[in-house]
Image (cartoon, rainbow, N blue to C red; front, side, top):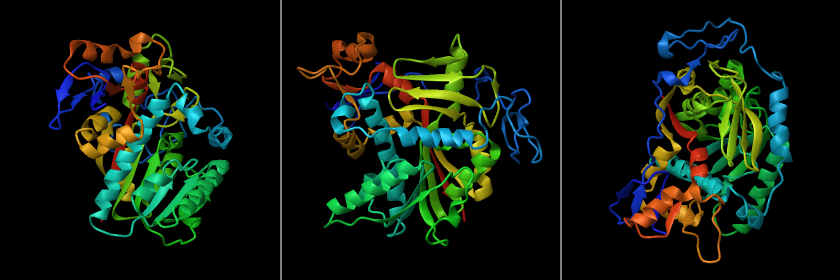
Length: 407
């Protein structure tokens, strides 16, 4: 399966002889006027001291909390998030392989692997011993990635205490299986990183990190300015100069664009759904929506207007290195052999046509029209590696980011 196909029918010939099809017109245009008006919800004021937002938008430090429509704003939302992830049952390999979103989950996991690998390599170029903070570690889905990166110390933290315990258990299981291999030292902290200062909880209060990784988590902090700032402080305050804050988060421009194009206050498909409270008003903080990903996530989230993050990060001497959509990042990485081989190893793409005696993940034939068109036209040899269109649509709501700590 050397040929990789994304969500359109444009085939690009690579130097390795493989074919890659790039995404068709799926980039978010952040200067578009079709995205609604960020920061203009009725009775919604931000508490930030942000001064460099688009349209010269300013907010004073002593304004009242936003927005008007918020649910369970004190401990309620954090408790909901913690309860959701604590209640998630671990499924075995066979059960996961039967999931409708088996390939999408693997694809997202590959994205994290490629991002983590890139920045571990950057740090490795200048120093040997690497210390990492995993902010929102969950059940430990990235433990092996850090082992592969040959780091020396990992601090795992999450709001969900059951998840942290499972993460710790997985770590010691991994360590027991790796008797003759180097495995980093680790510590585990249960905390609401949107409200609690992590530096007071570390075993070594003077610890400094080379990388902070925050995967699919930061958007939970955008309930209020204070919470977003606290999580950013936890992510960046203890970084060495030259250290990186990396992560993945939903792309607010893509979410609002799809909402505005919808006839209702929701959008999605059989794989994912996003439900907003209303159209047109998108406050900078507290813009709540409900996100559902088939069988995995069903919890409220908050819109992250990324230019705000860039301005807030300056408070902690952080400079944006890059911001890319998942599809942009994917197209860039698959030009190189190592990430492409990892795609295969992680089963991050589905074979099309399906192997004999196997079924495609989606039961809808039209979900593979983009792949069928390529196979039928003959520019690339089958089988192809791709995702169903429903899964491409879900994956393309995300972006990756990286900030660097300035001296």
